[in-house]
Image (cartoon, rainbow, N blue to C red; front, side, top):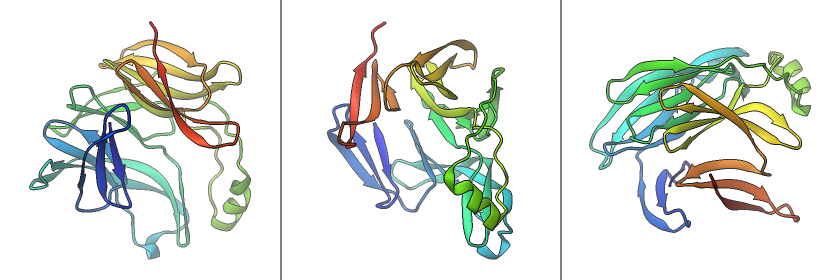
Amino acid sequence: MYIFDGLALKIVQLDLEGNIITHFKVGKSYSDFCGVNDRWIIFMKMIYPPLEDRKGKLYDLPCSIELISHDGSKEREAFVFTRKTFLAPMAAASWDPWYSLLSQDGRRLYVCHSREYLIEVLDIETGKIICRFNRDFSRVKHTEQVWEKDFGRKYNFPKIKYEPDIRGLFLNGHFIWVKTAVSDEKKGDMFDVFDENGRFVDNFYLGLKGSLLAVQEGFLYLLEKDEAENLFIAKYKIIE
């Protein structure tokens, strides 16, 4: 398991019990750490316009996928996605989500960067989108948050009609778990399952409290709270 510390500009590798295996510095800040394969450390960097060009509207911001060799001697741009983001002179807010998932062999990057149900697959070495996949999905109406009314009046932030269809991507062996916007109070969050070629397999409700962080070697790792509201990571074994 790899963790990117954006403040310290450091990558930490842990084993599945939380012990540190190694750690190393990176040369600059990035917006997202996408993973590591046998050749590259993979990041995403969003490119923002200067403050004077932010006019209180949605912008299609470039999201550059950048590859860095393990020794830091080589660096190149693999692809540029776009992500809608709200920018005003003195404010900013997310609009489109960003989720990325590295395939088991480290050759493909699965990316969601749209509020609607869509996953694009990037071949990292060639820098080309090799496929896209989605499914028919009944959108979930957005529940307005407390901050939205005042923020909207002050900065002309657009009204949100629907929740983002996708809320997370996870890898379970050769299968991709897609966390959707559908949630049931008793059954939990609904996940769709696709094979690595984007073929829909099934869906299920994950009836556990907390937020899924990762799926690794037959275990689930969730962020949960105890009775005193203290956060902890819980580990569950998947029983087939």
